[in-house]
Image (cartoon, rainbow, N blue to C red; front, top):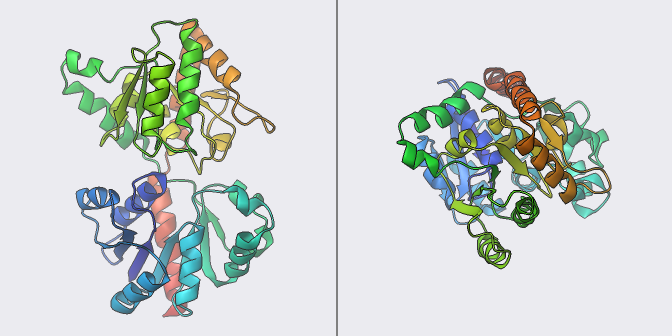
Length: 362
């Protein structure tokens, strides 16, 4: 069986992490090839020994070219745009549409939602991280009977080992550079909202002058973040660590993960930080509403105001100042990570989806 995985992103983020984990976990009788736009993602693919085809741009022409060359039995398309492209270039190859997020356009009538909704009949299966992706979609009736709610593959033990074991190999002096009170992990983009994180740190500094924060990630807003840090006189409080091959060391060495995202598909970084017993403070968007609760942290927002800076600041100060509350949230985070440890069952479900589809076309 040959499965062609297709993503138009050239960067490594949560969705690409899911794709790589799926490909790595497939049995020998399933050959997986990853079609991607050329870029930084290639380093990750090479590191993980993933068979891939890199093209400057992923469009219908590129997809058709690879299909004609590879003759896949199944196409595994990531996110809405690529899923739609695939329906336009093939009528006879089963398509798995794998959705990681639920953008605002999906939730209301409009050209894109009408087109994707109409295309649902062409998908053999639609994989979603949580039921909310289907329930909030304007075209949910078209998705009925085709969805598989799998969450996101998460291996709590492997995550913990990557953060803990790497730290044990470092000197105390070197490990000190990874320590923080507050941690931001994600691309420096509008969706992840790093500017708000900097403003939150600025507010916390008023009561905790020595607050130490680290930002892990790179992106288009990097220069803007640096300028704001200088403008707010936070050079001694915030360290920008850039992209990191192993961000889990930072997770293990922080006190609190702060995620003021404007948009979030699942929020894997938050779940990963829970594996280290770190309380999570997150905005009320996307997957956070499913993964974060009062036992492991706090949702700092509401339906009308998804990102409440005051709530972020208040909860940060409470966690820093009240050891008993911090211990309760930390224990809750470990328990939450354990409950969400689904890696093996997730991969078993994906294999079953492939096998069931393969049987119907052979």
